[in-house]
Length: 107
Length: 120
Image (cartoon, rainbow over all chains, first blue to last red; front, side, top):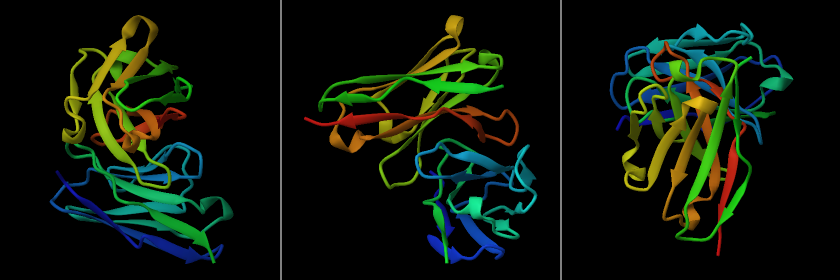
């Protein structure tokens, strides 16, 4: 199985900050990576697919990059509604493993 | 609009089985794979398996092989996930999710989740 490792596990940031989350796959997955946002008590929401494609309706302050084994999610200017937990998922093969999550907290 | 509506919370005893339903609307049910993902309280997301609603073909994570069964009823656009031999560690919120169709096995729409509690 492909292992997905996210870092950091949590980050404290202020509104307006730029936040970067990384995700590393244990083997190459081309660009088959997705990013999700999850708020407490809610289902995950797709933000980015194919490493860098913005899902319809998602604000442009979210962006993704990377290929192979190393990927990045960037929030260019953190907004109050962005405080949540973010997960990466490899979409290359089964099982569709997720990273352990990164909690973005208010500083 | 695309919606996945899951069945309500369940409380089960250890050793029992649970069957969670996921009713799809707003799209052609047989055109998109369905995945199941679970999340224990305060924990991360755990992928369980996939099903092709058109063919009925399935694939399960090794951890759940022999205990999970994913089925569907195309006449009512509903997918099911049954987990047997329940133990306390299976207490979690279970989600169904639709595969995007491009971008690999990416999940674009999710159900609201079903809490399954396993307790004696």
